[in-house]
Image 1 (cartoon, rainbow, N blue to C red):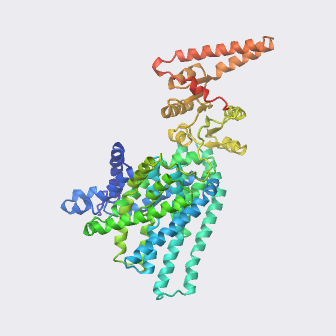
Image 2 (cartoon, helix red, strand yellow):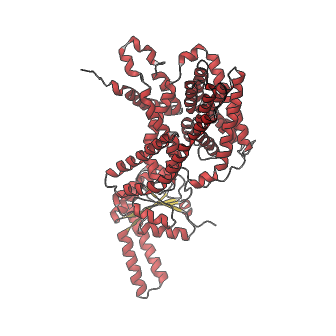
Image 3 (cartoon, rainbow, N blue to C red):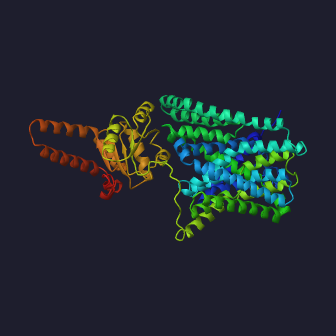
Length: 608
């Protein structure tokens, strides 16, 4: 009988335990969790505690002995990252960024590859080997750079746009680079010459990639919206969240597998799926559903990078490895800075962009490993380069910190040049309406009539579809989730109006919104007087009870029809409404009442 002892899942348990300790610890000391995961990989890997496992069997339970078990999970983490990036884009935004992506991005890959290859030739490598090394190291790490910039709040500005444009161009260049390595391998095996038939076969490998990309886009446009609409309509009770999560996982994994089958990377397929979903009303809910998976799976990737750092090799030639890593970072940063300035990126933004893109990326391991397996790169020199590349990835959080500090010091001396105009991705400054049925639609129409922008959320897929067909900015999603409200821009929302007729759900939305912002103007629909008093206790600015308002409306119509002057009727109605509001508020303990200011209410007035 075979004894398992939990060994099949031991490495996964070790990783989860590390995640539960590392992230809170590093957050407490305000250190990037990325560094924490990288350090955990080094500590828990074969070159960390693993080297002492022979002194006691118990120590093996605290090490990751088979990194290959985590490889597929780490690939999923990168795919989820690219998927969420795609959700923040749209075809309009991509068109607006095309100059940065296909200009700055592709030129960065080409020039960095050329300069690095020249440097490797000076170190004694032949032309083919130097070219492969240069191509591999020219790529940066999307999986490390984007989370680090997100932690520092640098994604939505000029730094985030220029950095993402370059990273996107690099991801698109992976497939052509791999084909180029194959061509070089054919040339090397042919004694320096290249048979046209071999070249043709190598180029034909790009055809499935192009066809696969086209099919992915077409199928995505046809299938994704109806599929999520069907899932949304099937949401009932507690199963709704599970169905949505399952649909999100299917899209990410399915798009990634389809891209891999056509010769592209899994991350490119996930990115395309994200861009396609960004055009739909389900974008915000999808972001909330996959966020936990993305963070945890990216942690697996970072741990894998840490495990890959060979400490024995570093100790054997520390000066060589450190100098090589520093040279790679320095060359790439200098080239990227010059090109960014050439493409109109401001000086401060160019510095930050250059520093975070200086270190190598995860695709360097793919390209260089292929080069070694094909006999193009030196099996003696390439491992040293890979160690230097791994070490450089550890510096990304430090590069981001250095870039931000240099940028802040230069702010007074060097104002940033304007970036290309990109359509906004968020509803900054808009009024948010939760529930876009009959009441919500009427409020939206009145806001539009008075020049007030708004966005809306609803869990009725059919209502969302009708509203978007009418040109309204309405998204599918559960506003009772703080994460959903954050994704919809509640931090910059001028007011939030809850129009739903389910009292329990109204309370849930009010709690989530008030927990995020104490100064938010928060107006909610109440079922009756008791519900209104409860909403005031939860912190609403105004509660509007249906029964009271119906009574006041009936009274108003009656008095007007009896011939009482309209001015007197309106004054009486407003006085009675204020009296009711005071009664509801008096039912709430003093320390639990909302304290909205008149200045905040004034923000809803039409702008001059």
